[in-house]
Length: 182
Image 1 (cartoon, helix red, strand yellow):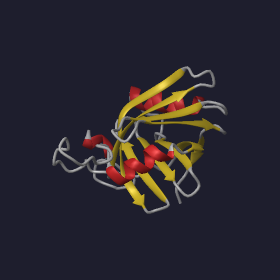
Image 2 (image 1 turned 120 degrees about the horizontal axis):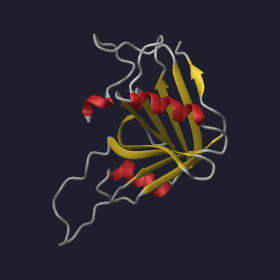
Image 3 (image 1 turned 60 degrees about the vertical axis):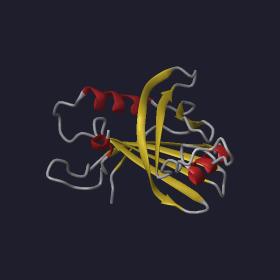
């Protein structure tokens, strides 16, 4: 799993930074209680004390595993990405920013928990292939699903946690667009 989560902006002998991305983004009201508990205590939940409490440290709150689903306006699934791992990119008292990269799909996910505004912002960006070469099936399916997103469609995110399951549905307001860094 860790190889699929490398930073897409880091250059190496195997992978160069993509020149063009297809970006989809959406926002929603944040499920703030569960999200705040997760940032404070990690996936193991709020600690309980007393004779029934085991002396185990809480899970590391710096990573989160989620399922992302792209749904059309009638809630029919277009695509599902299970077990996408995100790491904390930035965290302070006002917000937490999570980021992860799936190398197989050339897909980066960014999830912002904005506690100050009680907002959840979710962005998916997929690297567009250079030239007309062969594109792997997983990458092609990702690009097709992002291109198919229309206003009213949904990016749904689910996290199972002892802090309380987090289920965020983000309504898409505009189609995915091409973006070039810099």
